[in-house]
Image 1 (cartoon, helix red, strand yellow):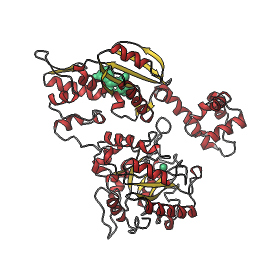
Image 2 (cartoon, rainbow, N blue to C red):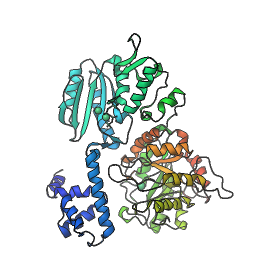
Image 3 (cartoon, protein in one colour):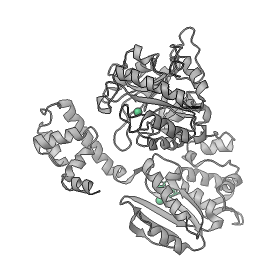
Length: 529
Ligand code: DGT
Ligand code: CA
Ligand code: CA
Ligand code: ZN
């Protein structure tokens, strides 16, 4: 786009570097540039040293300190290479699917699959690994290395080629023998830790395992290799989905026939977190609803931002009432589909919600989340979240750790305390506490499927499940296309060993309403139908 090129040419490159610092947004960059001519990180560092930032309008000592920490965070990331080298799943996955689709069209390809961390659906991807079987490997490699996305060829070989796509991401393609496809897929899917455990187990049972197959030690006879499943089964294990292969107990579970029956995309009946053009979304409520219907959902929850989030065009109280009216009208029009009226309200510094109860009670459900004051101390932040959970109108805490992958660390939160609190709050008299509910006032923790967040992460999800708590899944879509990102949420849930029963929005809308009707407000969800 020539306009883009023009802007890039006329913007000092250092400004974009400064923008990468967590804590520094475009407004601050502008301020620094205009007031102090700061156009590079070294200049910014010097200004911090000379205490020049704190005196700028709207800044202060604390902001200065936070920017300093941000620079340190950024350089620490650069040191490990994680910022420059690892890519978000949400960026790598579509690219890999495009490559696979393109290669599948070749007549010379027999079988093809992604492997590595991408097949395990890890939240960030180091490089993309793809395996194929083919009768003419050379042709396949030619086609692969001349794909339009390829910007550099690192290596061209008949069994392995390696390229850089779109200037940043490495993609490795391996051609393997049909008789070894399963073994290679198992080996290159990893994780390395999973493979090490599997190899140990194989050797205890008198086998050797490598990328060519599973071999009996006593006579070196190949006993499996064509299919992954054969390899696991021969070792006395059930097949295990790639998302589980992280050496977190999956081999033991498989041995004891205790593998979870993992959540699937089709189990999700509705998406509970999205924005429309009433706040900072791009599309209308109706467009969001129709897109969700096309995806096979029964319902959605519209959760636009609340009034204090000015940057996201949060709704004033009078706008809330108009929006609820629009949802009512749409619900009458859309047959066999339900729009739940919700909001994503801000948790203020003291744990209070930024709409009064009279407004909150108008909604079918309320998501509460933290968008400011990330720097509070652990104790204060924990109390803030717990206070919000105890609000009888709050049903969901969105993106509970607040992390932005490769950009912002999770805020300091005592998660065990939040979980324990969620379980320990005594049930108010007369209110039945549904099994697995996070609190008697109906508060669940969210798994936000937006690829920059994937929050809660797999480890926390696993802990939640262990405690018998359920989560809700939402994409945080800001347009209709974003709704498809549910796939990353489902994958993360699977990495956290979650099953259908562990996710609230696998329920149909009537059952869901029943659960939420149990909250102390009783009458919700009927009003906006
Ligand atoms: P990444 O690319 O950093 O996101 O992570 P992976 O898991 O895709 O790792 P990668 O691309 O280095 O290698 C792909 C798979 O190949 C890995 O998951 C397991 C297997 N693998 C690679 N190196 C070794 C190794 O030294 N030992 C074993 N057992 N397996 C390995
Ligand atoms: Ca990889
Ligand atoms: Ca690789
Ligand atoms: Zn949101």
